[in-house]
Amino acid sequence: MKYFYSRKQLLKNSSIMQIIIFGAPGVGKGTQAKIISLKYGIPHISTGDILREAVAKKTELGLLAKEAIDCGDLVSDDLMGGLLKESFENIDSKKGFILDGFPRTIAQAEILIVVFENLGIKKPHFIILTTKANILVERLTSRRLCTKCNTISNLSDIFDENRCPSCGTENTLIKRKDDQKDVILNRLNVYRETTKPIIEHCKASIDMIFIDATANIDVVQKEISIALNN
Ligand code: AMP
Image (cartoon, rainbow, N blue to C red; front, top):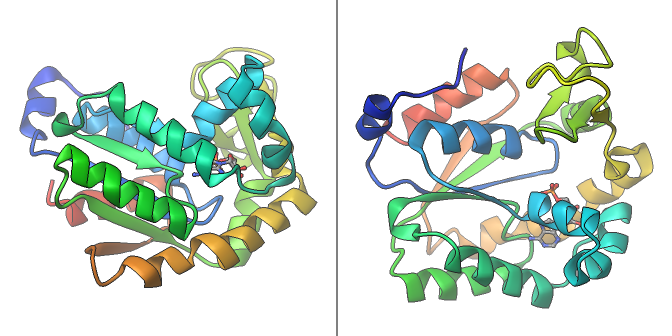
């Protein structure tokens, strides 16, 4: 499936898309969020991407966040709350957005509720992707990041290991430091203990859409489109 959309198609898809995409590391949030961002012409706010860029540029935020990212722990709620507010100041949220990687703690969920209240965002779509733990481990250990176009690919889709299957650039595929086995296990543990409880905490106040993300990218994308009524 190709994910390029004409202006006409974007207009057709134009009911306001204010989306939070949630789920365990490796479930496919980033991949699906990028497709949705293109499909609806809305900004993709990925807290993980913002942090990785800050680390690469050695900004103050990057220096503060690096250690937590490298060992699969969470960056502090204070820093992340500031980052979130700044991200929303830089977009017109009334025209839609997809938020990926936030919230990851109950405190962050509370910050998000306040930010949304202040921005008049009343009924965001809260999409929760799910799959089994063994599939998450398998996906995380076999994925590669292109340092040029930022696309994550799975080894099974990479025909030439020196070339990014998305942008075609040579020698840009790397394994993320936090995709090493011991770090992966810590990230999954952090998800189970600290992030997943957000679902229970917020379920009375927000409509949640659960999507089984075990199937391939196209099938999951279709399920999301159906759930969003688009
Ligand atoms: P991701 O690309 O979303 O898997 O994020 C990579 C790493 O960035 C995580 O393992 C955390 O160390 C950090 N991170 C991203 N988003 C958050 C957040 N909302 N709160 C705390 N840490 C975060």
